[in-house]
Image 1 (cartoon, helix red, strand yellow):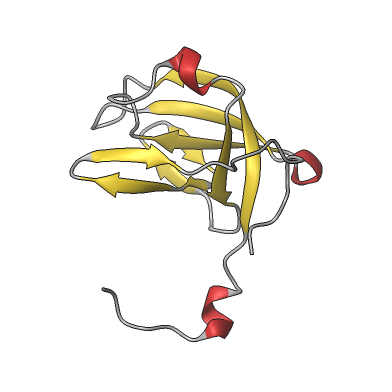
Image 2 (tube, helix red, strand yellow):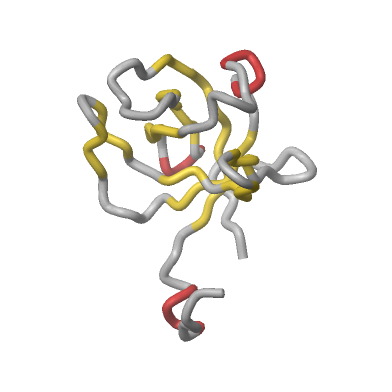
Length: 111
């Protein structure tokens, strides 16, 4: 377990639901990854790099709702600017994306 944080630290994290609207290969990434384009509704479209190629095909990801942190600073990954962090559960080296059980509006906040 990681070091405990205050509730005030937790509420600074902006977790939102978005729908993946495009998935591209990312050959310049050090580890196999996709470039995702995600629609967050009123927050707009954001891009993310995700190392999820072992469990998900591009077809599996297209139109899938996911959860992401949308208020991290942008991060340069090779020649790509990642604008959000898609979250998932990690088992060994695999990442299982977190997603709502039912369809919700893009941009919905996680609390």
